[in-house]
Length: 486
Image (cartoon, rainbow, N blue to C red; front, side):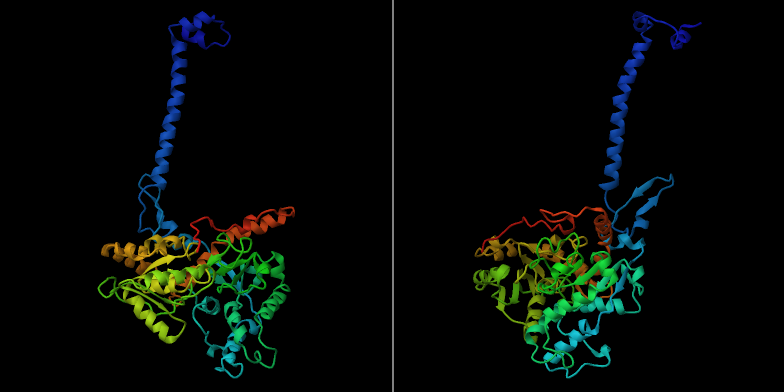
């Protein structure tokens, strides 16, 4: 029997010395194995790192428009991933639209609010028979009207949600109460509500809405988690906000809401509807002779106190137009002219962190200068606001000469870059655009569905207990940014 055969025989009894001196064979093999293991591990780690960097950090193909087109196979059948950032809205395009049930609320919560508003101003004498003749009054908080119109429209295209008529099929339930309009009817209503009822009361309307909802089987089923409410005015639904806080809230900011009521996790930030006509010209600075423009109420409360300080440091600055103005047709005309002829438009906080002038500036291609330390902005998963706006903390902005010096240092080339980006994204802020704000709001709402399902299932199995801190369903955004002491 050969020596090799003997060495493989498990019954052979070799001494330790024979294991070491048998031509060095076993020792060499053991050395090679001990060397190969770390070597192979190192090679595998290098290959894994290469695959990771090649997959996730390689240049992104801006022409890829959806998930299907971003997954391509070469001739060797190897898979490559090319993500798109040019329009992330297309990512879920191959997923089925979310099924939404539009509650058929009693008329007083929708068209009745419009009629009450118009009757309070003597522009309507009695309820109308044909509701199609009614037009939503006002502009700033008209998102509730646009979303309602979109869902009742027979032909709907390009939306991430589809209306279903059977609530048993629905994944989400939309409550179309015109809460922002109801709020402003309240203080000016001189006579009766529609018909011969009592004086209009927004608080009573909110409570009546909840009484109606609490009778609905689908509201009780999941404690309202799968319900969507619009409360765009900062004070809308304030009376019942704790009763609806489990749902998806469509808000303009979190200025009047507590951490346990609203968050970026479960809610959607909406843009105000712009009040002035969009700028339809090309990018350029030739016709924009003013450096900075602002027109609005000088005196505000809470976070808006910075406005008066900005007036004080900017009033005498060359090429800076800053005017006190209130809501009127003439003010809108002057604001349109001013924004269309200025390079930068000032956006200080109002009574709450956001205000409609930001969206006026965007559609005017007037580069926004945002002085609002705690602002939340719409659609930030698709819009990089650093490319369309300049952010200045309140403490720096109110220093005399700071803003004007900083803005004068911005080159013409950089201004043109801002304007070009504004032109690309302004459709997101135009409710009238078929591919604009409304579709984007529904996309944002549809993205909340996985979290809603998670929380519903979680609620079914958790033991109820007293919480010493906010539940994870109400996690709010990080509010530890720059804080101004004014």
